[in-house]
Amino acid sequence: AIYTPVFYLEVAAEFSQSATLGDVGRSVTRQVTAQLNECVEHVVKLLNTAKDGGGETWMTCLPSEVRAYTFWVAAKRDGGQNGVLETVLYPYGPEGGSVDWARARQDIRRQLHEKYHVPKQLPRFLERMAAFRGGPLIPIDRLLNVHATMPESRCVGKRYLVRGDYLYYHYLHDRMDDSGWGCAYRSMQTICSWIRLQGLWRTSETEKSPIPSHEVIQKTLVSAGDKPYSFLGSREWIGAMEIALCLDKLYGITCRVIHISAGSEANTKARELAHHFETTGSPVMIGGGVLAYTLLGVDWNEDTGKTRYLILDPHYVGEDNPAKIFKKGWCAWKEDTLFLQDRFYNFCLPQLPPECV
Image (cartoon, rainbow, N blue to C red):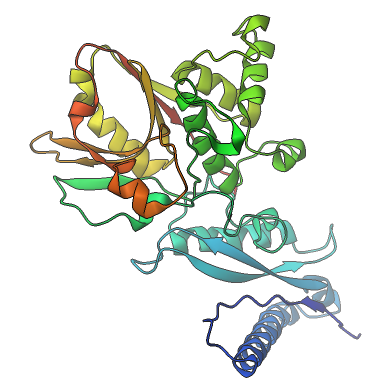
């Protein structure tokens, strides 16, 4: 019997501006050679295992195709750099054979989740999330992970931060003048960008749709029966409960809402917020008083109870320039005085779905 597998290779590399065409060619050649060798080693390993069974059945234990996929991984790897391109080989074969190829690919994905410490509820390594097949690589129309380049500042305890990529949405984006009323809409858009960049969409229709506009958010609330028809086109505020409803309707994402009756109680929820960022990692919308914010993390001292809050402020108006944003404190660590002592607040914490490796 003749075995003729098909290999689909994919090369991803980063080069400096001073790289020559020869540098690029040599790098591509090395990577193609390495991938081919890896494909052959993978098949040979399967072949040796299958032949131990004897007879002609070994042919059904080999993949008919091996495909390379490149993924952008933002999670830290063993304390290393925060952001790498990982090229992975996935085997494919006929259905109904002696090998469950879908299970084989799932096993590879599980290893990747462990390698990069990515929660198994995030479908980071599914084929649809591959960087060069429509999945998110590095979006360029908004600031990505703006807090990652913040100037260093003192810690009061241990920091618990957002996990995964997100985009910064604020006043006047998309030529929409929402100054004075759209802060919660912008916070929700930042959360939606996190959901999209983690691959947590529910349907192919949701996958192709853009981040929801103010109009889409209002229509969602009206169709859900939460708001009257007159709400459409208005400049009415929304809060944590409305955002939780929208995320459920648009993405199938449930939210946990933490309520405090006064801003003076904020630090009593630090443990819960720290646990959220450590286990789930999604951005949190804060609604209360007359303002809304996006929470990206907490700096919490378990012994003293002192807490600071990493705030991404949707009220910012200006160009997407990180230096200006940091200088004026639009993305910054804030003391608990951020919360008005006589106003209530709701924290909207988007939750992860069941395991979807």
